[in-house]
Image 1: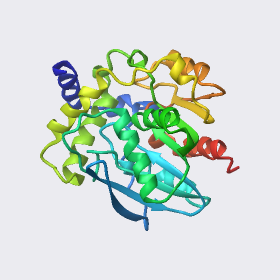
Image 2: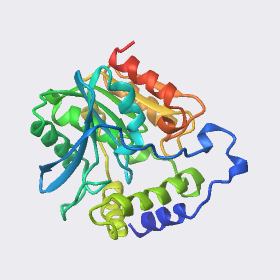
Image 3: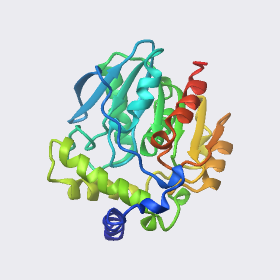
Image 4: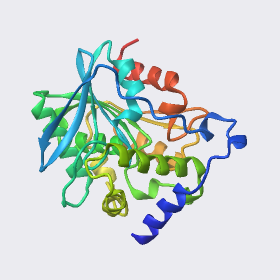
Length: 281
């Protein structure tokens, strides 16, 4: 645990060298603004207040962000899908504007939060777009709440901890993200001075989760896209191949010249894959 925390804070101290960032995958573009005109609210679920924002109309799509981030990171994706879909952006428990409690973090708990939000919004089933931890939640939902999930677009996810790369603490882009996430937490969170406690809480989950077996993954019935950037700083490419091979009928999409932050680095290409995934073009 202490090693994970130390790595995170060392990571945050690493600068992106402007002269070294000629390629898209070596950049961390600004976090987008919240979706203009979106309807926002809080759902009381599982002992917390879960923030969500809605935009657009049509078949429902839930967008889930990655660890330490918030829903603003995927605003451009929500805006791209809104013309044909009812898009629901969520701040996961303890992230962004949502509260947390003393329950230990776990993907099952975070998944149950999303299902409870669907209940609150009277949505029987939704397609899920998930980045990193959000993609993991989507896959967990497909296994544990299969009737509530349509299609799944899981970007930069992993299904066991062996799928993570070693040495991420040396990556300057991830370091910049960790630093930015702390600043955004201080600005958005209902508990703005408790970032260190929040990181320690969620790090306990990352030590051992997810840890799904092949047999569990093979129970997934939803159509799944396993997507990632060619230069993902955190996820091994052979793990992407493993997930796509193991989940029945899954499709593998690897986006060139981008990383774990492809939706910021090349939103046009990323959104094109989302439209293909949803059958919008």
